[in-house]
Each structure stands twice: as structure tokens, then as C-alpha cells.
Length: 182
Length: 351
Ligand SMILES: [Zn+2]
Image (cartoon, rainbow over all chains, first blue to last red; front, side):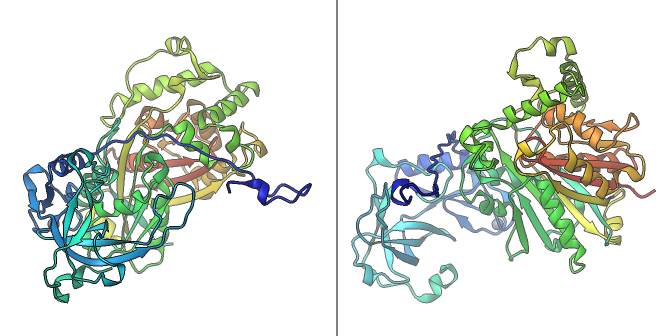
């Protein structure tokens, strides 16, 4: 509800009340996300490897959600900035106030080499939307070093990576991504 | 009704302005509750959590919190946008179905990243009170004023509650505010929202807690002194505070009656009185006399992790039976402005 005048009949009963609410929050970046962000700024993607099940989580969570044990910097492992598309969607941006996108674009889940879980909501670049497919091999297109801001909650890659471009390698076989599709 | 008992309880303690994520904060607490229960995680048949994403401003934080549970292979779980006491209530109802015997209830809250006087306005009705930004402390002050005007309490009575809470909290390692303060020194402090002073209001606390509930004989097998849930009830006032007699906690009285509080003596009552005057209202509503020790933990005035405080009250009531050998205790949880919602849980040990 942004413009009540358009929805009220002249002299009729009031049907809408615009009420904008603003809440202020303090953003705290947890130590695990902070270390991950520092590595991103440096052009490196890192993960935590669970000492029990050996799965690698990138971004790291500070724990293994399957084994429910904590992980720390000593469990940090490097993860490649290349991987494969395991799921994607094409978004058609609705032109609401504040929308910055003007054209259809694709976001994908990407399984990075050296990680056991996908990174979600990654933008696909340099490929027509109707050519995107499961198993597509991609590589990171890094943002300039001074624009690499990590997500404060430790989700995704923040603004460190502008998107992912196809590498031209043959697609990965279904067996490689079947466990990671949504 | 199936007999259901609390067999273990764990809490994070009063965390102040933590940097950890809510999930990171929860993980060791849930692990501790599960380990203390002596029950394998795989034997937990139902999990219920309580939290509010508005507090830390993290959408879907309640989903991420499940990562602290060990939710693979998939588990049966639910969430309430309420204090964890209501998660415990749902878990108790779930155990009444009879097909699962063990449940985990937990909750978490990070209050330090927002202004609660802003955020808690959102629980008001959106037409009349919300546009006024009628915050929870101001509304509590109206209730405290109503008590004074009706001759039911004085500011000195409020200060007595605070002084006792701080004193009791001295022996609670999880408390945030403790120590010896005199009524005179408390009354010399300026008002925050008259007639309430800062010490009459709860501190800002981050925290988490978890309990394990077990049905039937299994509870006695895994726990030397389980605390049986003999009565549990939740009642609510009308949403609009203006429709209520603020000098009474009517829904707390009803919940207490339905939970059977008055059918036998209560040795210890842990009450979610976030404001000093609320303890007076609740003690009256629940019919607690001099033979009942109120808030030996210091209560919510000593530590108040939002969404967790009520579950901690029940956890403390459990500890009184499990660790201190008491026989009959109660835990109370509240939600909403001016004690709008009340949950009462009566616990008993094996005689
Ligand atoms: Zn693991």
C-alpha cells in the first residue's frame, strides 16, 4: 500500500491506512563469517571440514550440522573458485519501487570443487538463459578487490563474486550433481 | 493423559551482545541437553523450537536454527513464534499422541541487536496502538501505575521485588544482574517510565535453552529424579490492553487454576515477571503464599533472554526437583504486553 488516494472512493469509508515502519538493527558478523570474509577479500574461498564426517562446508558454519560438533579455524580448508551448476532459476524482475534489475537473469546453486554443499543464489554470466543446464562447469568472476564484501551472516559469497561464467569444459555427468539438485 | 517428565535442561547463561549467530549459540546448549538426558539423539521423536526473527532482524533464522539440532536424517519438527515454554507445551501435546516417547524443546533469542522498545511494538494491534509506538516498557508502566492507583502496591513494593531478585541471583551462575542492593538506593534512582525505574525493567540478554521431555517409564530409566508435568495450561487476555483490568492477571489466574496450582502446596515458583510489579500480580493471580519461594534464580529481572526466559523458568523449576530434591514446583511463562499471555506448568517429583 503506497498510494491510498488511488484506492479510496471520494467521500467513502477509509479502507486503507498507509503505515511505514522502520526498524534499526545492529549488524554483528560472527567470527567464522568474519574469517571467511577476510579470505574472500583476498580472493580465496574457504570451507570448514568436519573432523568426524569429513564433509566440507563452504561457506563455513562453525559446526557440522550433521554431526552437531563445532568446527574452528583449525578445520579450515581451501575450496576452488570453480564448480558446476546443480540447480538454477530464471528471474523476471517485477518493477516494484527500489528494483534494480531490468532484464531476466539467472541465479544458480553451484557445487564448488572441494566442497560438499552448494553455494546458493549465484548469478550466471556470459551464457544465454536458454543454454543453462545442470552440470554446466563454471568459474568465478571476482569483483574488484575493494568491492568484496562478505555477507554478515556468513551466507553465500556476498559481493565478492560478480557471477560465474562457463569454462567451456564438458558438462559434469548426472552422477556428480544428482545429490545436490533441489 | 500420558505421564510426561522433564529429564534434562541446559541453558547458555546470560550472554551480552554476542557476536555468534543464533545457530552457533544454540549448538552447545542443545548438545548439553541431549547429553545430560542420556538418550541417543536418534531416539528423539519430536523437536519443537521457539524464536522470533524480528529480534535480530534475520529472516528465516528459525530455519537455520535447525542446523543446531542434527536434522539429518530428516526429523519431525515444528516451530512457534513464542517463548520456548510454548515449544515445550507443543512437545508435551505431541507426546500425548502416544507414538513417540522423547521430545526436544529449545529456544533462542538475540535481543541485543535491535531496540526492543521498537521491535516489541509490532505485537500491538496495528490500528490503534502500533501507530502510537506504544512500547512494552511504557505499557508495563501503565500497569504498574494502575496497581499503585488501586492501592494494591507501592513503588517500595516494586523495589523489594528487585532487591530480592538481585540477592537470589547471587547464587545463580547464569544470572546477569545480581548482588546486594537496598530498597532505599533503588528508590533514589530516576524513572525510566514512571513509576518504573531501570531496575524494575529486565536487562537486555541474549541466550538459549533446551529441555528433553520423556513419556512414561522411560523417564525413570534415564533420570534419577525426573520432574513430571502434572498440569500445563495457556490462557490469553483480550489483545487490546484497554479492554482489560490491568490490576489483575486474569489469564494467569485461569492458567494456574487449569494447571492445578492450588490443589497442593507449591514449594518453588519460577515466574516470568519481566517487570517488578508483574511478580506481585502473578503471585496474587496464582494464589502463592508465604510458603512458596518465588524466583530463587533471580527470575527474569536478573536475566531476560527474550523467547527463552519462560523456558528457563520451567527449566529452573525442573532443577529444583531434579537437583535440590523439592517435590512440587511451578514454572510460568508470559508473552505480550502487560502479561497478555500466560502459561503455567506444574511439576512434581516422585514421592
Ligand atoms: Zn560432520
